[in-house]
Length: 253
Image 1 (cartoon, helix red, strand yellow):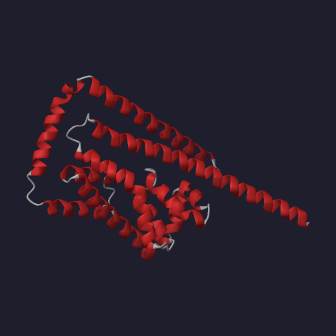
Image 2 (image 1 turned 30 degrees about the vertical axis):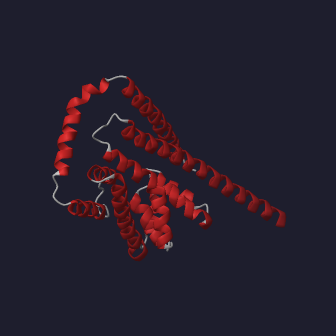
Image 3 (image 1 turned 45 degrees about the vertical axis):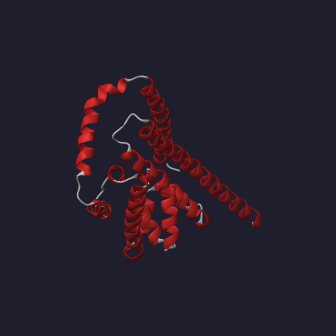
């Protein structure tokens, strides 16, 4: 493992710890906000949010909003658009169950396009992605048996880009339906949380708003630590096999 990769892993561990600390801090802040009536200082912010809520409510057709959301997801294929913001907006416009369904559908659409892009137009996709993302390469070195749940982990960690992972699995000729189901499984906590954030964005100091943020930070922090631990296991197994092969070669001589 190179010095650059070691530095990157240390930074990821630091990021994970920061996310976990932020999760605890937000949880504490949420309870403080319930105890102390300090939220009055943010009346202007709440007024702006109320104006936005009224503007959203005045939209004549919610189907038009769904169409725009789907177009944004499709646009993400070529343009680095903030999908997180789209999930939140869906939560602002629709009740949480509908917002979650819309975001699941949009995410499925995006991943499907990039999956088949990698499958039919991939070319050097595998080499390009594995060269660019050393962490992805090391995780994939664990073998084909681990590919399934590694995909779930890829979707849990915010570090791994949606499009690149989708293209990679398409180029690997992975089963499409398994790819979609495992990807959505990994995205489920974030999609539900972001949709809930959007639903309660007009009351940003409530537990219903803060708790999903805490959940996102916690899951992100724990999953980053899990990725680094998994890479350690893969590296140790690889070193063990190398040592065993070397020892066997010496015995034959």
